[in-house]
Structures are given as C-alpha cells and as structure tokens.
Amino acid sequence: MDISTNTVLITGGASGIGWALAERFLQAGSQVIVCGRRADKLQEAQQKYPQLHVRQCDVGQASERVALLDWVRSDFPQVNVLINNAGIQRRMQLANSQEDWTETQSEIAINLEAPIHLSTLFIPHLREQPKAAIVNVTSGLAFVPGAFAPVYSATKAALHSFTMSLRHQLSKTSIEVIELVPPAVNTDLGGTGLHNFGVPVGDFADAMMAGLEAGALEVGYGTSETNRKASREQIDEIFQQMNSRF
Image (tube, rainbow, N blue to C red; front, top):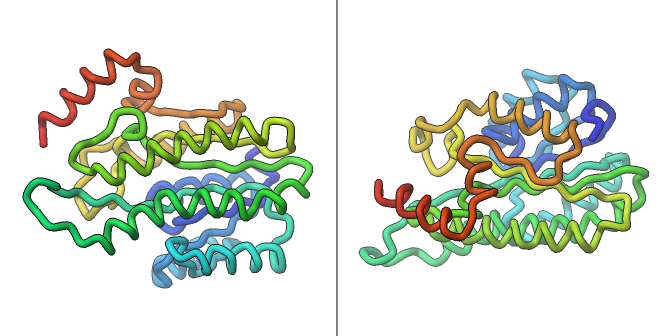
C-alpha cells in the first residue's frame, strides 16, 4: 500500500490505535477521516490536525453505519481505504456474576457486527476505486483467547475468520483485504490502566504502517506475531501461561 496517496476512513479513530494510525497516515500525506462516539475526542483530534475530517458516529448502531456510507459517498467519494478499528473490551467472570446482556450485545455489535456490516456496505463503493483496501483490526486474542475477556476474544476470532473469507472472495477485485493483529497495547481499551503493561502504541503503529507499505496482508507485532504463527500445541501452552495470571 502506498500510504501517502489514499483517502482513509478509520472507525474509532480519535483515540488509541486508531488515532496512532490516523496520525501516521496524515503525516505521510494521505487524507484522513475519523469517526467515533465521543465529540470531545473528535474535537481534540481536529484541533491538533485541522486538515483532519471527523464525524460523530456510533458504529454499534446499524442505522448509523448506513448513514456513514451515505455521508462518505456524498462528501468524500474518493475514500478508498476503510479501517475497521473501533472496538471495546469487557472483562468478566462468567461463573460468578449475572452479566448484563445489553452490554455483551453492545460488545458484539461494535467488535463484530460493525466491521462485517461496514465491509459489505462499502464494497460497491470501494470497487469503484482503482485501488482500495479494507483493513480489519483484530487481536492476538483472536488466535489465543484471553479467558478474562471471553466475548472480546470470540469476536476477534470471528473477525479473523471473516477477514480470511472476505480476502478470498475479493481476490479478483481492486480491493485488498488486510488484517492488523495487535498484541496488548498501552491504550485505554477496557478501562484506564488495564493495559499499562502493553507495548507503546507508537511502536505498534509504526510496525503496522511498515507492514502496510511492504504489502503484507496479515501483520502481527510481538506476542501477537507469536500467537499468529503458533501451532495447535503451542496455542494450548500459550493459553495456559497467559490465563494462569487471571
């Protein structure tokens, strides 16, 4: 991917991994649009980069996903890269609590329904572009689940599976399908301070941009690269080591 000539739409792009990617695309010369739920974060992002375009949008709602496509087609018809980055992570103890299904449903909607729906919504638009890409942000937990975040891990595993199938189905079109696989990254995913042990978000984003430039279709980093390449026996071992801490 030429990171300097695209018009990029990033969901969940005003904070965390999405924001780190947005900054790097902007600095490389691409036009960037970020959407997110929090107006204050979007305003902060635009104050730092006045050339950035923003839209308040809850991708957990199907109607807002449709409205996002309509807005893009009207105002930014040159969008050729969709990055499905928005995600939430909830930690839960399934044996000892009564989970609020509405919260679980929201996690599934944002992490899985949204990228599947947005991908399928945007395919006709992206096929009109000479070169295009759908980039799905999954997780190392898609390959080795974190028992502490069972729904999050399951949604990311499902998104990895969908991404593989989508790539196969679009292989004869102008649309590349790329998967970015974060390890634990030092962001506020799941709550402030829960990922302080993670890799610096800037280092991760730099590695992802390098992978995109190199033409990689599945890009891991650190432990997520280990998980991505693990054998079945290694997955069991990594699972036990990782989850024995929780």
